[in-house]
Length: 470
Image (cartoon, rainbow, N blue to C red; front, side, top):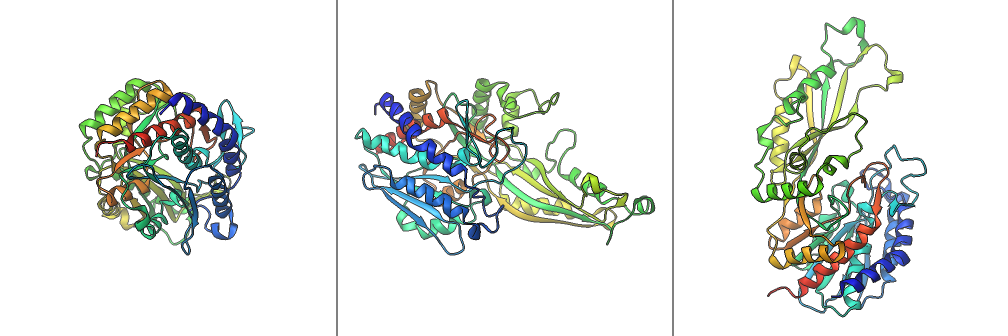
């Protein structure tokens, strides 16, 4: 494959075709069902799917087939198939549903208005994960244009990933005969350590979400009358959280939620930390004067990829400051989001956590922990030599630097599901969610140059797959 020619063609097609379509896509507020329960009647998901399908059908690929599949009561799924000129099967994955708006967008930016600035396309869903369909199909097109053989390719773009991929298993089952058994799965929904090379994601953490509630009184009472007689619901909640997390270090106190870090993943973290240095922490928007939990970039990478961690992502029962009177609160609740080590049994972790929080409630308080979701993580199988070589070759050709690998702190439910279904399949999990790209938060952007280069790397991998040893 002529990588120089492919890079020129990729740049031209991104400018001519992909960027205008992505801008139109960003304008559509197609929030995932978890954040828009009325998604079906609102119609935004259908508008986004129709836009993407129309773009796919305009592409000049031999044998291209594009379908918008709808199972009753489920978000639609975009199914694209390109027949191969070589044996085998490759499955490429992305999603088109989006996170909600969030607050804190910079002046001149908002989630539903695409803005081009300094080589970045700002707006919700461009990087997470609208670009994936465009990059996947263009990567295949580059092979066809140069007459380079490739296996049959299927692209699945789902509409419920940001809600935990709740609809995807039904579609995978529905399409099982057509999907076959791919030798390679390519996912373009992951992070990258920087925008200077091709990054391979080798692990994903699991996610355990639930609500911890403490009830003391049947109604609020005057704080002068009640404090000193009834315990504070917030104090009881705080004490229960101490069972889970060391308040001074952030370490999870329950040993059952820890696993050893495999030596290969430790070596990857050290190599990534050596390349990234202070950028490991520098990618986050710390307030002035705030320090990360460690000055060691290797420790920070391992903390965020192989150690369990806790975030409190919501609360109930605490009035807003402007309406907070002198009242002893009857009930408080907090939403807990735990990131779990990649190889930890998520179902067992949920049971362990529920038992630890609900046992022996202080003062006989009514304490409940209701599990909302418990998703397992994923640890990649060893790379086949042909795939490892192709990943590095693609990085050298399109970025001018060798590839690097690291774990990712987030979760992609689809990957664990497919890994269980296809235990002998190779996985290439990568993406463009790099420093400050801020998926899920304000000022999300797609780094356009990195996305173009990743497109070329995917072409390189598809070409290598076609000529892999039997």
